[in-house]
Image 1 (cartoon, rainbow, N blue to C red):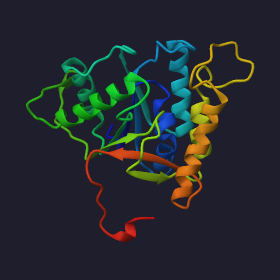
Image 2: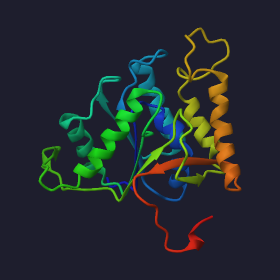
Image 3: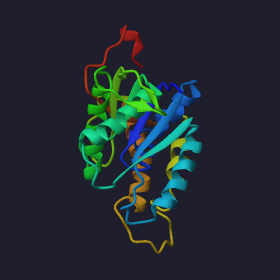
Image 4: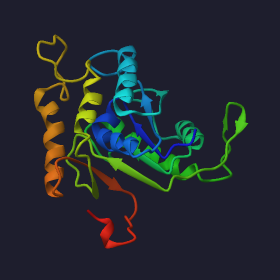
Length: 238
């Protein structure tokens, strides 16, 4: 299946938090969208890998995603080497996306920056014809996405552009709340973590509101880029 957009996350819930509203909007516009999680988040303080597997499925349903995969890399310990790059390359060549979205380039969790660089490097290498890969016993053709974008996570990184997600904040919120094991829940006996506080849950809305305010919209999500953005006309800007 060829996808228009393929979003990668180091952990299940990264994509929902970083660009869930954008993906829901693109799905509504008829785009074919997929999510690939690098790990199962098995080192997370709360929940289990099995619980997060189920939550990831529910999150994908909430966003209307066509396909979701998990590459089963080791949470906390995957590295940006040939073995891991080839796993990502096979996935990119399998779905042949025009756009890849991945983790923040720098963030609090070490896996986010690692995942960002791993996916970005794999996107470039995937376009080299002398790197041979197979899927289901068949030789894959080289494929390089047109662009790679990075969503924003824990740190308030200055975005290079923002996407108006007014009308899609509820879908984003529903997808995030599918991860009941990870986020704030009154009366929970689970250990408190930085993302399991009411302040963090509230920040999802107020960050989106603030980015929206800056462009004259209700809600927005921010992204950073690896090369200059280009438009055909000044009229393309909102």
